Length: 552
Image 1 (tube, rainbow, N blue to C red):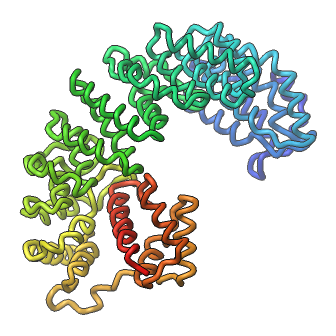
Image 2: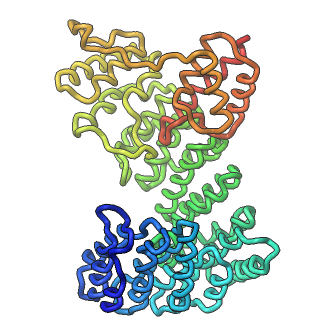
């Protein structure tokens, strides 16, 4: 390789950038060639990262550094002593899919054709990880995938092979024989004796037959809830675009995603998982079911009734995380949870916690009671809300977590109870002002929403600045915003302001009225958020729209 590298005029090739000259490519290739099993893995990974940074360069005839490096990359990928060869094969697959077109692409294509006989050897490599990575080179071609399928015996390669076959066949001309042969392969796997491959066959068939998952629902529940089979998914379930394996719960999430267009089928599937989890004592499965229920109800209001029953049935679960997520679901569903007020009240002192999220089961049960207007939530409510902010510098969370609500979001709707809560809110504000705490602004906003002075006695007016509010749009602009959101489904940040402006204007044009009617009828959350705020904003927007039909 050394002599061959020296024979290439690397200086004549165009690098990937000013700080990534083509002359660095042979240096990195030599570093990889010198590495072996005793080399520090971090050193090897840095070399591969450097190589990917240097390739591909802008492809023009005679200057494509990636094409010049191709024979050496194949040499290294085929050499058994090259460490982490699958990473090198991943790089080859990446380069194979990134041509620039035109004359340069024809030069590049010819170079790849010359290497193809050697690249084919990767499909029979002794390392299943390398074989799996090599499949990326033919991921869109049913012929080579089928050829590999009939020779492959390793399950960790057969699963991604099946999934790739389904996608490739879906893109192929239905009249060609490849699709029919793929269907036969999937049918054999579906009725075979390997439960993991049976699940893979169902998911692989979905791009060609979206009803395949729905028809296989009972079988999927049976396999995915089998405690003996569950660990096998993590050992063999790979996809071609992901280095690490997927666990059973990840496969469940994929099934729910495919079922989601039929909300009833999706929620029924999730409920069956939870029931099986309770029957066999699998807390992980019950947690998984609640996570999927959360994802469904977050985007589809039609899932509310089924998810409400599911969550209510798990409020007394022995697992802390399950009770936590169940209480959170009842809280976001608001007044729908009113029939379960007694069960929620029984959890007010529950100190159970989630593994990943802040707060306790009792905190979420208390919030759920405030959402349904149950006065049993009021004692100690303010203290429970502000306590976390005294113990840490803010709170950490993701924007889609089933997390604790912000203080203002809990208290703003409780204006009817301000006679009971006001002394505690003012005391908390005094404490926060003295400590320069995080909640000063939130507590002032709550007082303002209740029609109370946001200032403490003796505080100057300068201590409180009115919150910024978006200016009202012109009527034509407000109508355009509503019509755009109704048409494309893409959230427009001025949408709530536009609705408010139209309501106060006192007149709705017929196209706007029809658009709002369609929005209310659509099975989606009218919100920009991905956490509990999606439910609050959706409720507010639907309330605005509900008042609009009375307008002329």
